[in-house]
Length: 166
Image (cartoon, rainbow, N blue to C red; front, side, top):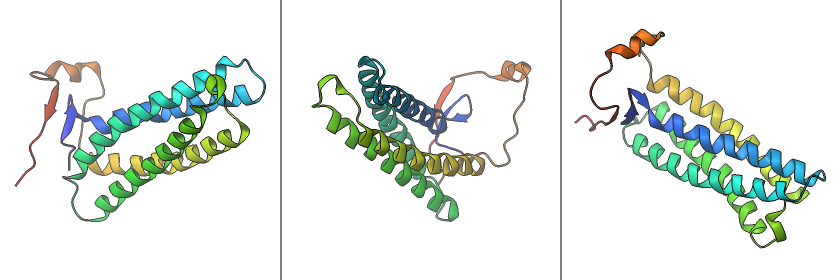
């Protein structure tokens, strides 16, 4: 089974998911530095990193929902739905932290909010595990070249949207 949204034959959704995960981790690192007594601007950088991660998570969720339409109704579908719910839970906790911080001066972090973000990252780790399982299922049987010579055969549009099979 292949993803409906692809770039150069590779599914888009796994590529998009890396952005919110990376930004959420960055936000936690900046917030940790802020809580441990770093300059006040680190809390604001952490806040805006979390906001950017939420935007990226929304884009990844849209791509995930498009892919979910074509997932067969077996164990893979269950894994895909669980993956999306886990990511929603992680994003929800970060959204809660961002909403609470929006009214604070300089959007600084507190130890309680940092703890909430750490719990969200732990939930996100479960999402990474589920996402890895999904990528392996979506690309089963797919062989691709491992050298730059394999790119020479690429022609036509680099982005494609595949219609579902009847």
